[in-house]
Amino acid sequence: MAQVLEFKLPDLGEGLTEAEIVRWLVQVGDVVAVDQPVVEVETAKAMVEVPCPYGGVVTARFGEEGQELPVGAPLLTVAVGAPASGGGPGHAAAGFSGQGTAEGSPAGAGTAEGSGNVLVGYGTGAPPARRRRVRPSGLTGRGGTSAPGRGTPGAADRASGAARVEPGMAGFREPGVVQPDTSRAAGPGEGPVPVISPLVRRLARENGLDLRELHGSGPDGLILRADVEGALRAAQTRTAQPATAPHARPTAPATSAAPRVPSSPVGGIRTPLKGVRGAVADKLSRSRREIPDATCWVDADATELMRARAAMNAAGGPKISLIALLARICTAALARFPELNSTVDMEAREVVQLDQVHLGFAAQTERGLVVPVVRDAHTRDAESLTAEFARLTDAARTGTLTPAELTGGTFTLNNYGVFGVDGSTPIINHPEAAMLGVGRIVPKPWVHEGELAVRQVVQLSLTFDHRVCDGGTAGGFLRYVADCVEQPAVLLRTL
Image (cartoon, rainbow, N blue to C red; front, side, top):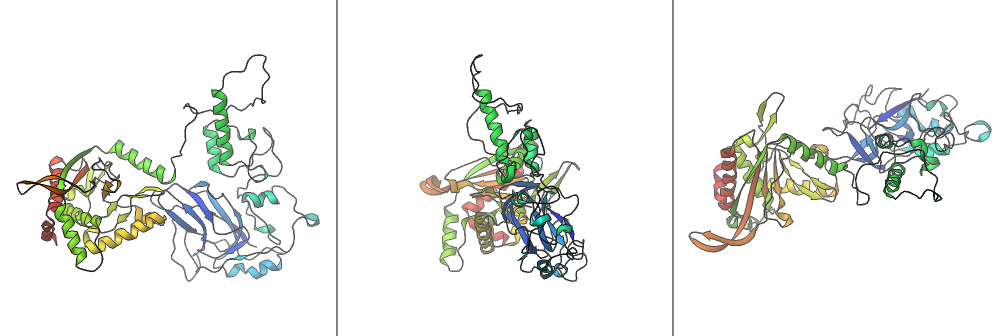
């Protein structure tokens, strides 16, 4: 007997609680191998392919492309082990026992080899193999047809992502696996409610909407998130319209469901705070709530820094980027003022000074603002920093940054000069203790060697957590950065 195992959306690390399905990589009926990617999801950090820890036949998928699922929600079910008795020839060819898992055991529990692609909460097993689709040789049910019902999936099951039981797979359905009940057309106020997504249920519950009053626009009446949002908008519009005259004939029948409508003006554009934007909003709000920050700034003459960079690039070899030079200055400054490479542990009431500098840098992408992290920046020279900045920037633009590349920073460099602005007051990237902001470098009148001259001037700003240091330390750090910008030879002492 085969056993149907449920694969849930795993913890993708770093506190992520939900992910949006971007693209399914398998269909119901496909044969999958251990650690084969089955779905591509987008989190608040990056887009990742999620491998399945089981090998066998996909019997159900949960969620549609574009739908958000919380961590721990079912992704799909897989029939593993030998096929049930009476299985057709298609299943004998599938060879479930050769997919690398013992019956009912997670991948990696009893295998000799593994891929090493470990997800939180799951092991790994045999290397991936090409997927195969199990082809039906007939129809189940009495008389050659599939009778719709809770125990016999039909067209509604296939359209809504529920389990599709192929010939000889009647025993593959796992008791207890939640399936949408579309056994009959459910009119308003009666019968089962065809809803798969827990997010749709939560949205309706939070707004006081009775799902039994809705007609779903999905396959076989499946209620989608768009249906709930449309009902809420319609209710919002009704509350904004003037009352009908006592003897006027109503244009539409009144509904018995009265959703709770948010008390906000009708109209305007609503943008959900989710994904990257939601993660940024949460982190910045937490930073403002928890960190008593202060900002100091200074103008610096960057003429010599620009000349030094031009000389480096004229000497041959890989080109050195300006942000790499600024990063090298930051790491040198943090070596002198390590208090700013810290974090605050309020539970222990301690300031934790960190040994390594993992330098984050703000990058604006089509998906929003992200902060990739250059690991061990204090050990890198300008050439290595240039290459790593370029690699992470390309990955940020294509949305392929991993969660590990977006977390763990200890200090952030924010070059907002690329937006054509001179200054800013950066918000600290919680739980870090400081952020250096760099404005645009533009020609300005400047007193140089006692005479007025046109020089390349930049404004530098430092926002710091006042719990980790006082203004003297912050001022000393910023002044050292400005000195290195004005006289790059100062860096020679730290080489």
